[in-house]
Image (cartoon, rainbow, N blue to C red):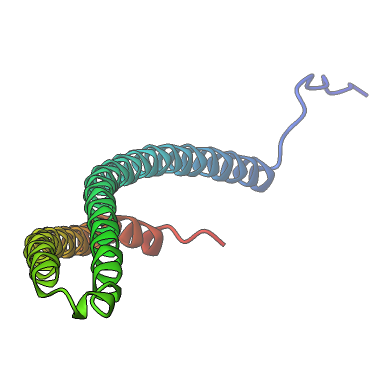
Length: 188
């Protein structure tokens, strides 16, 4: 009996070979999908960084605008404080004039007998009243200045409010791409 020569290479089942090729194709496909997903994720992160940079710049602009408005408001308040101090000093002068007038009026009783002396005191009182009128006129000027400062401050605050509303609208407008991106790539 002649023995058949044995084949050194084992025979592979064609089904097993096809399954191995399919598995290899699936692995390569999965690796390609993972690479595409990682590239998409990198692009999304870069886009998100750009959006965050824009938001940071807009917040910086908002803060700079608010700080400039606060400086203007503090200048108006400082001016108002100076006007209040002026009004206070004028009120002190009025009080001193009133005290002087009260003293002179108190002297009228003993001067009843002396008409000449009484006339002199009345003239002094008239001068004091004229001084008071001048002081009151000066006070009215200062009150008008304070009123003008308050109106300027109200106008500045109104402009600042408009600027803040415009910045809020700009922030809403700038946030639209981020919301769209979030809808496209929701993060759980």
